[in-house]
Image (tube, rainbow, N blue to C red; front, side, top):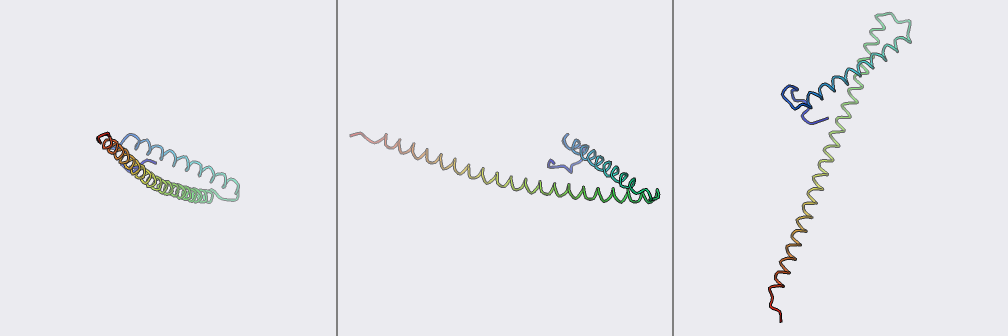
Length: 124
């Protein structure tokens, strides 16, 4: 998921609208799958009346979509945690690399100054 996902599709970048459409299509696919599973479940219970079958199917679809929603929200939370962990680790590594480069540059400058000072000494 991209950051800024909750912006208005009309005023945001093009990928926001694509994300919204993708989310809608994904939700519809899950709903259709849950509906098919509910119909299969009701077909195995021929003693149910039409009203009872519709009630069971509706209940099954709602519960199935709730479970799917919870799984997806858990995945999103974990992705955010991982992103935060990786960003902090990247920042720490970048800071350490900058420190090492600064120390290396200081060492090179110190050596250059030493060589320059030695070159300036009169030779006996």
